[in-house]
Image (cartoon, rainbow, N blue to C red; front, side, top):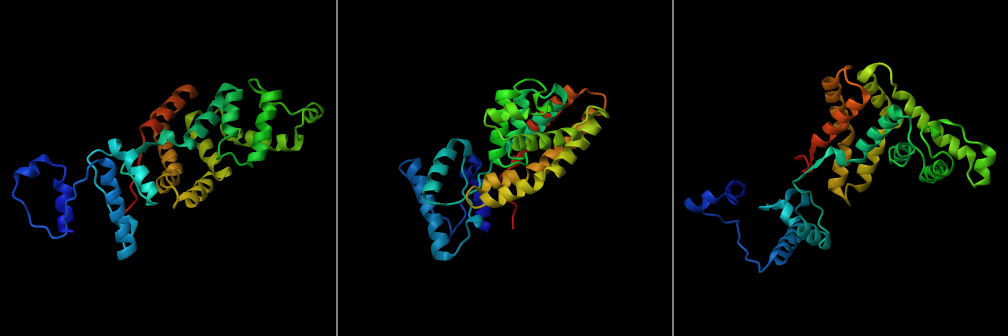
Length: 275
């Protein structure tokens, strides 16, 4: 542990080259001909420690001087050796699809349900309908309700079925959408909007969807799973901050801008917590 601490402090610190050398029994130096060979040696060493000595992947660290520069080679080599890993980098919360789901639903509420906004909401993984029903509804909207506010009109059964659409499926998806929209009232100011988003998350079981997705991909894509698992809490935190900043004095358009800015500014680290 002492030698590891020395490495962490001094490995990429130029000043360490001018200090007295310290004895080390557990540190080796390997010279590689190129970056690819270097990562292959690291990957092979990790595999040896895991297979021969029973070490856990989570207990092994690889320190790099420039993660962004080396990330492609790292990902390529570790993928070939089937080594799961976390990269010490941060992702903007705005990259998570839950943020787009919130923003697009708000745009539906305050811009009259334009086709593109409705389509983005329905296609989201957080919209609670099976994919086949979503696809049919989106095709229906494209053919018969491709205009602002089109979703608010009930489908005409004869016309829809003549074009091959099942009106029960279309109406069920439409009702789910309108139920979600009902939480996002234009009255009551931004505090009512925030309360509506929280109610929407509860009604659509957003937290449960995120939890199930994270569990599904925790081994195959651990970083993405962690990012997803923390999305709901992070979105709600940004929502609370936006509510304090905007108060009820800002109009809906300004509030959405503040919210989007908050999503972009929030960074989520992908390093796993220590056991």
